[in-house]
Length: 273
Image (cartoon, rainbow, N blue to C red; front, side, top):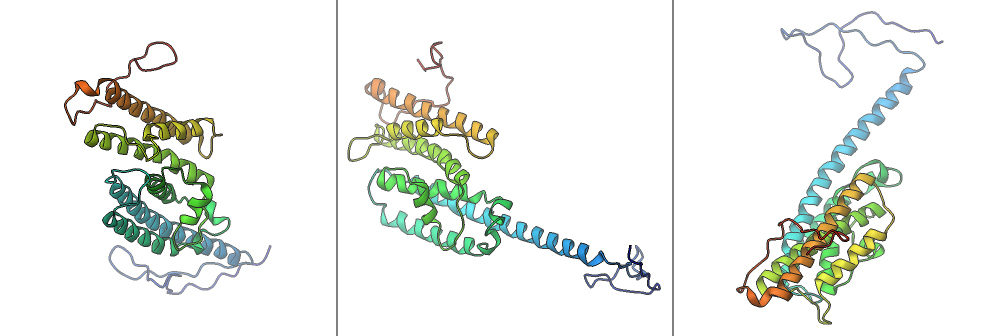
């Protein structure tokens, strides 16, 4: 083993340039740490960990801000009352402004999440972003955005969209479809439908069927939990459609069923009565 060199004690500043003091405020007399052949190696590890923690904090802050902007996009899109039609100019302008802000933020971490770092750091904001852009795409085209289209929709930054980001974002999309169906039915007295007569209820059932036959991706517990939530959302819209179609004439205008009421199980296949 290499010989250890121990310098004589002398007052010295610490590595970060600060001065160590005791509880009385007096400067402490410090000694320089011993150095040997391995010291530079461990200093390299220290520097790499410092960079890692700084990078992670930066990514978390950007992810939080992007998530907030994506949620604002979704809130704006919930005001849309049509399917397969262009957005109203005021809504379109608001969406474009949020979209531009998201691109500016993602550009600041583009180099931090390249290569293996893309899987090293958790970019939860991309799930929320996928939810927002797929919801906008559905409202304007009444179709589900593909993974490639969603990847190309990431604004202003070359950031990889993982399969988990896409699938979990589509899971969250079903919740927005349910809320859109509920609010529009309350206002118009009918389940929203596109120009071809296809309803949002049918689209939601198709998306749900696709996700249920899909092989689980990402975290098994989270996938299972999102699956259960999605299935319940589909049932809520089905009960909504039943209430409007079968009993709509018996209800006053603006009536809405209680979607949180307990499901009645007829004992066969878990279907609602």
